[in-house]
Image (cartoon, rainbow, N blue to C red; front, side, top):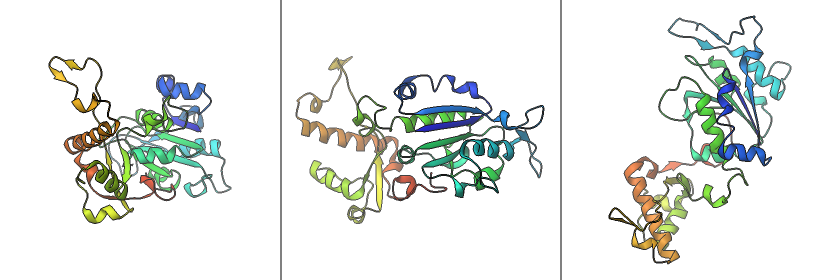
Length: 284
């Protein structure tokens, strides 16, 4: 898989791309990463990438021209210019923006199935809206907060996707049994019934439908010593009964989700962003 990152601060990515899972995946030949300086796609001596917005207002906005030209240099342009409708199959163009749809683990899973991901890092007060409307296939936010630019968000998306690529992790189960794993309601119902657990946050009528799902956080983990400052490892983890351990972990994952992220236990319809259907425009 190939990652192309477009930014006005290419040096930012020396660290994020040079360590950990991303570095190992590059060295193993599982991914390619390339960082492109947007200023190289300008045509004035000052290499201007921003301008004042129409209608006035504080701050500057990133111009559309350098971004369109940079992406077209990577993917090729139609006679009338590249648009999101003409993006090659297996490729997504992602604009990192505080105004985008929330990036979720299921979005990362869908991206991991692609051949190429082009990440556009916004800056200043934002990006010319024509980039979001006519070039980007997805506009994504990594959280309900504002950053000064999309570089950190792009690094986060890159790692979230890379770790889901087969072979990137030493233990493939690490990307399955972790926070934000998703089960259809009918599967949850079967799993809970087998474990003798209730269905918190999910209506009984939803249990028979595959059209909705909920997510859970990872279960608590413990290491040696078995007793630390009077705090003991739960007895269920010490007996060696794998079925009892599985039931305990599942129950604790539900309880931790209820405490920290009760919103994840609510029903939500499955859409392309959640792993159903084709990965299409405005689904992330």
